[in-house]
Amino acid sequence: MSKFITFQPIGEILQEAGLITNPQLELALRDQLYYQDMRLGEILALRGWVKQNTADFFVQEWFKLVDKKIEHPIGFYLNRAGLLSEEDIKIILLEQRKHCLRFGDIAIKQGLIKPNTVEFFLQNLFPSQLNNARTVENTQQQKKITKDDITYWVTLSSKKLTNP
Image 1 (cartoon, rainbow, N blue to C red):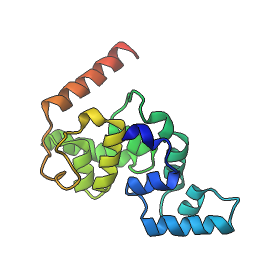
Image 2: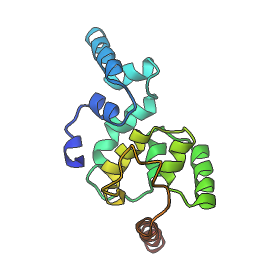
Image 3: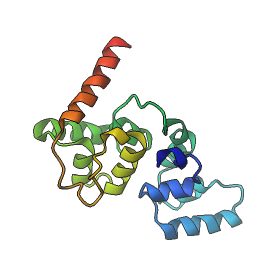
Image 4: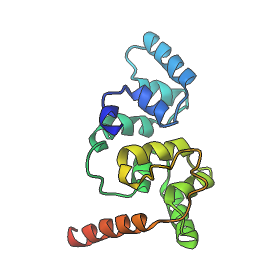
């Protein structure tokens, strides 16, 4: 799936990520006919449907990330996309330590991000972290950290320690 995402227009990517709806995209595209000097992301931000830094992230950084080796945890990328603040991440990490739940599940539980947005990031940036049976519908059922999660985090940590 992710190898073809780089060829999608930004509006479709934002829609697939659950950040805008189809009617919002259609209206923004119609607006773009009248305001041809404005980019789609600017129109979406002007209407208040996404933050400007979110649109910029998907235009400038997303294509560089997909199908590349990811070096940071999901919270880093959600922050870069303007979807979670530093404070949100701190709160999620505290909750994660207390309850041993996955980062995305806590963000969803706290209402900070939509399940399909977390799923979109996982599918495209962390496909090895997805359980084949995991879908947006059963996200709430699978909350415990698995052995694979721990192995992944230890691998990331050891790379940071050996390659500062």
